[in-house]
Image 1 (cartoon, rainbow, N blue to C red):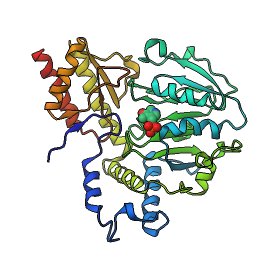
Image 2 (image 1 turned 120 degrees about the vertical axis):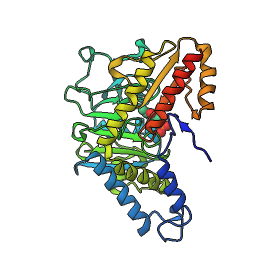
Image 3 (image 1 turned 90 degrees about the vertical axis):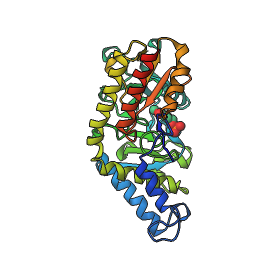
Image 4 (image 1 turned 30 degrees about the vertical axis):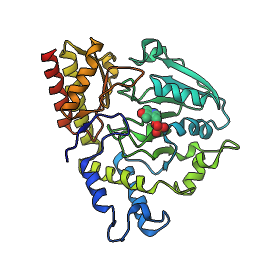
Length: 359
Ligand SMILES: *Cc1c(COP(=O)(O)O)cnc(C)c1O
């Protein structure tokens, strides 16, 4: 058996050690005589998995007790609706920053529930930059300011938390959560789908400052009601138990690697060497403003588009797969989340320079 280096944007590569543990536990989890998949979510065994999941997550991000952590379904896409439903609290406006295709989707959904003030947008620049702070037009009557900390498709990442003019910050961290240290207390709400940097698809984490949930907006579906989910410990209905378990294994792996702080050092190293290789190349380039290049998703193109297919084929021959760029951007994209070993990045760089020599 040989495993490839999988640069998929999501679902994405998982730590091999996690898959091995899952394999070991498959038929018999800790002498229970059954797979985690077969356990009651209300039973003692699964409860211990659920408790460890939350406590490891809280520990990894130093989440204060004033914040609740939810493990939900419906993806980040579900949160595009759940956020305004829960956080408007009688207000009618919310401000959004638009820095890529995921921001746009969040905005489109929020418009069903409130007036969206797009405080800044880099759409006319093809989403390759973040507009200067001085140009933002934040409506201070907004219930919150929403942004996407890492645009998975466009490869644009905020290197610093934006100044929200005093508004509560709400952030979609789907593709860079746990990749760098953050100060939770500076945020009102953070959400993220797990399939980029936390595990397999099927779980969405929400970290929310509890006092923001004063009054629930009338008539919202119970399943998206944060207060109801808090009350039931994210078990308002049957949770995706096996996915919780797998996310838990990824968090345990992360702790063994030295946690988020240690991971950030590696992520900086991986991304810098890849960008450097792209920048010195005469056939490859990256179009994103140098100040907001993503550490997680590195889009790159060939000056000669006709070489895309031969390059992707050459990479695949070398065990480097899923490097196609998103259909809306074209070219290539290397997603290098926590679980992508540094060696995978080194091999990609080597493969690019070898391709350049022969083309
Ligand atoms: C993948 C992604 C989403 C969508 O996640 P789903 O789980 O498919 O709903 C939203 N935002 C960002 C930043 C993403 O990377």
